[in-house]
Length: 202
Ligand SMILES: N[C@@H](CCC(=O)N[C@@H](CS)C(=O)NCC(=O)O)C(=O)O
Image (cartoon, rainbow, N blue to C red; front, side):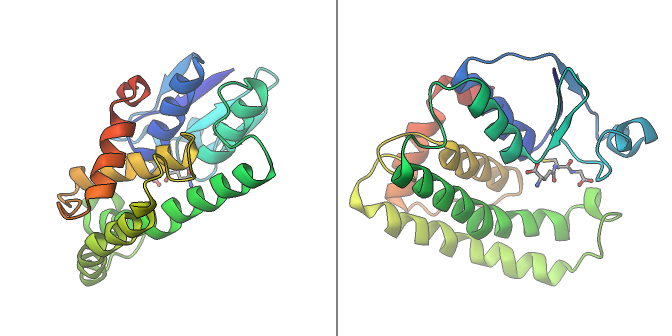
């Protein structure tokens, strides 16, 4: 089994997830700067030319960071990062999707529509990037209100994949010069909590 990975929030999600579970795998580094993700050999692995990709020993290919994490959750049960019963599993799914669609989506649009790296992938609309950039503080503000009930993690009392998704989003914000508002005290406290986990070094 091996993980194709490199720079970026989606590879980081899988690496943090693996570190939480104590999983180590052979890694194949895919270098964006050299265009390795669009080379024919890599497109044969993932036709979208994106990382991360998990390749199993029998040649099965799993793309999409959350799908990779789900596979690892099934094959290494503890600690459970997708919930442990009907309610907690639904909450984790809910919060992972919210983190991805509401916050990571907005921050991602800033990157996609403003960074030269993505110019070949789509038609960029710089004005849209700026509208999305302006919306980012409001998205963190929404999360701050949600966390005002004092729960330690997004989906409740237990750390989960949802915290990993929102945690890498905070990193992406920094890379693209977006700040989490200082007034979002609950988010700041949550971020400190998740970032101090050793897995976030991964
Ligand atoms: N939905 C995918 C997104 C994968 C993705 O966009 N990966 C980025 C790096 S974080 C990438 O490979 N970008 C290169 C490209 O899209 O050309 C996932 O969750 O894994």
